[in-house]
Length: 328
Length: 250
Image 1: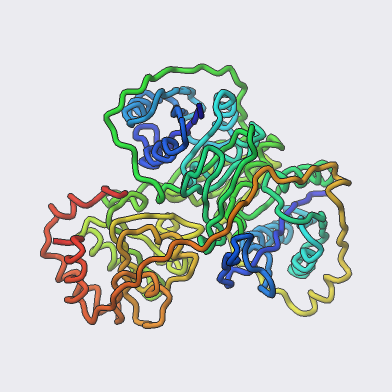
Image 2: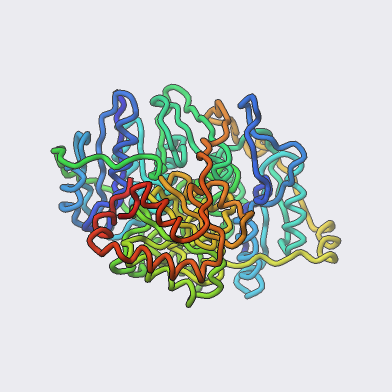
């Protein structure tokens, strides 16, 4: 039996959809028994949501006032203490998991595989390297336990309707005080989450200014879409960093992805290649984005966008609602 | 001395489109341009600015790998680092091994900050800084977009999925850099000449008593699945029709 521990990602109240995707990944490990760990100040609500994911055997709640914010230095010793009885420790490949899991793996002295996109056996996995230009098959030596971050764009979400047991675990650990939470920027209100949205409109350098970039928000709101951006657009200050899609930003898998005024550097393409449909709009007919696009339109974004908004606007908000937040 | 340690990894240049070898045994690196990992150059730039601002007195750069790594170290010295350490290693050096090497060097160098890239653009592992912080039992501030030193503390803005998170950490600490922390300076020709005289020492893994053997085997390298060729449409009307044909919009 492979005892798999998944570290839940949440904001204190709601379980992040990335956790349900980790469950799907965990269940593809042969003979897996899946446990979810919830570290929170009061994890009752999050634990209940985790327990409802199908295929999960039990949820272990680690309540501690120090867990009010997900600080790797504080969570890692608790998770390492919990993980000794498990063969696999998984976390989503979000900034939460990327920050935390290597610290847990180091305390356990076990190897970590980052960004697993497919499970070949309990010890053998596939993952992208070189910005997704190459896929490597990695195997951990027999007998070694392992940690892995899960490339959430590669896995669907586990369904709800499960009924796992929830247990509370008290750990008597002296936790460090050398790392203190100060603040986090408030999430954008209203618009769907970039990582789980069914529709994403992404803008690039061609917008030329933050003011022009805001055209995307109005179209996105009409279509119930999330907004993304290329690195160039973020570096230029047209869009905030949390919108960046690509190798060093977010890896997403929407139903439809619009790359608007984005040339399509390989570092960007690696973040979108799991999208069901890619639409490229760019005035440069030779732009690399057209090599991966399912539908390409060459032209001036400032003429095309208003026309697109006009033609798609006929579908009302009801349709947009039906599509938002569906994801894969 | 108030010292900062910076890691420099030699990687295939970001502009190279890397391909798997046809036999799946690795990636094609013959004749390919090699550079310092871009995130590591950001780490070095940040350390240099701290020194120039008076917060540090010495910036030491470390590379682990084959003799060719010394090119990237010389370049780092030309950028402004004071001293370089090359730890010789062949083949794949896993993040945990790099972290153990850095930890050994920390024992002698006693830095107040270790600044590393958040990930290397070759293996895309993104683990070394966090592993080092765990083994050192010190704070980590990963994906930093701003680091402000305030006495024996640092206030760090981090690029996280939700936006920007701000942490306060006690020093010494490990920092890993995100793209927008700074823009690394260009190297000037006279600095390249000067860098040749700066100290560069060489160590072996054996001298550091570190077993660098990998714990993971890389079995097969393949190209990613290709997407099917798409269609070009002539105008917005045709685009909307194509979207509707795919059932995407009503």
